[in-house]
Image (cartoon, rainbow, N blue to C red; front, side, top):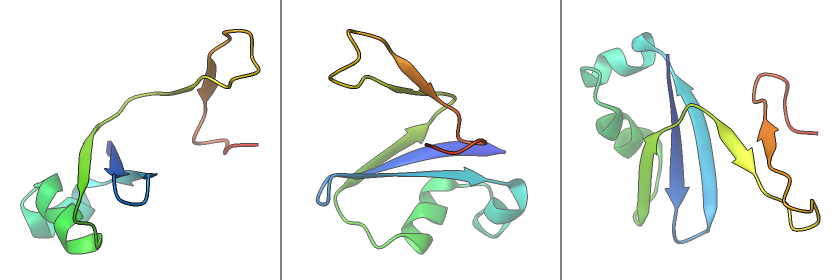
Length: 73
């Protein structure tokens, strides 16, 4: 499994997706081709991610780790 984050610079949104080998097989494992075929984005960037950290303004500098498997509450 490959986890990617796609940043849509036009809408200022982040998409996080877990890609399996089966999902990437039609694209010969090429994540870029998968994104181009499955997302309607023009101005974006993407990269692999392993962890998500969130720094809320009111946390006195505390960094919160987001557990995707459990969801965001």
